[in-house]
Image (cartoon, rainbow, N blue to C red; front, side, top):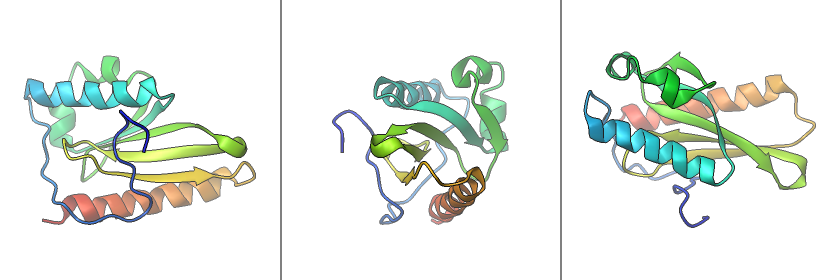
Amino acid sequence: MIVGVPLVIKRSANRIGYSAILHSDMDALGLLKEIIAAYERHGWRLKRVLLQSSTRAALAGQAEQLFKEATVHDAEFDALWFARRSHGNRQAWELRLIDEQRYALFEAFEADESEEEREEVRREMENRMREYATSV
């Protein structure tokens, strides 16, 4: 783990509970900004945003400025997709749950993997995150 970067859990994790934290609350907006800033400091770029409809509504008017060029998708949980170059000409992707409890899934893709193969792995990661985030 790099100091200052949220905990990275590679493809498996212990369940530690999850509760949706994004409402119209300013602390939630601060948490989002903090997570994004921490990743950006370490070279990650926000690529995709997964939001529940209630979260999207709470962020109305602020999402464009906060998420910039990242695409926003409807989801059953709130999470952020980040990407950056990795060693050996690989590309790293990380799916970070939006929660004060640090939880993320990580995958590094080889340079010769097709975008279709990468997207299939990202869908699997989203499914695993959904299972984690929606279990009580």
